[in-house]
Length: 259
Image 1 (cartoon, one colour):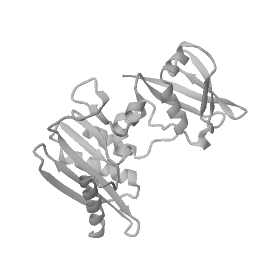
Image 2 (cartoon, rainbow, N blue to C red):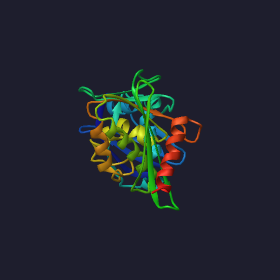
Image 3 (spheres, one colour):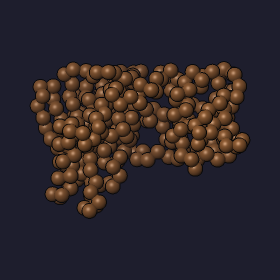
Image 4 (tube, rainbow, N blue to C red):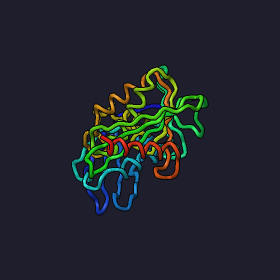
C-alpha cells in the first residue's frame, strides 16, 4: 500500500466554502469544501486530482474529521495519503484489522474472520473520578482455551490512554508469542497501530487539526512491542454482555477500589 506525503493549504473562503490547495512535490490541484454541509467539489482535472478522486472517501473523511476551528485561511498541514486503501472496510467495526510485522514489508489489511489457534488478549480500562485513579485489566486466553487474568492501578485520567496501557501491559506478558488477537472496546487501540502511526511517522506526528498527536511516547512503545508479530485487532461493543470484556471492566474497577 503506497503512502504519499502531501500539503494541504487553505487559501481562501468563497461564500460558505474553503478553497483548499492539495500539493505534492511538483504539482497541485484545488478543491472547494464546505465544512458545514460537507460538500466537496474538485475544481480541475489534473493527474493529482485523479489520485484524490480515486481515493475520495479517504479525502472526505480527513476533511470531515477536522475540527471547525481549524478551518481558517492560512491553515497549512502536511498529511499522508494511503493510496489504494479501502477506508470503508477499515471503518467497518465487524472487520478484524491485521498488522503483520513478521517480515518486511509490513502488511496491513482487514479480515472477516481471524486466525484460529491464536493467543487472545482481552483488554479494558476504567477511571473512577471519586478515587481519582485509573485501573486496567486484561485476560490472556491461550489456544487451549485456558485463561489468565491480570489487573492493576495505573497513572492516568484519560480513558483513551488507560485503554492503551491495558493493551501494552498485555503485550508485555506476551512478548514470546508471535500471533496475538487483541479484543478491545476501544477504537483508539484498534486503529492506532494500523492507521494512525504509519501516517504520523511520515508527517512529524501531526494530526489533521495541525496539532501534535497525544501520547506519542506511549504510542512509540506500543509500536515497538508489535515488532516481529502478527496482531489482529477486534472491536467489541462495551457493556454489551461480552463475557471477557465485562470481566475486564469489573476487575479494572476493582483494582481501583482495592488500592
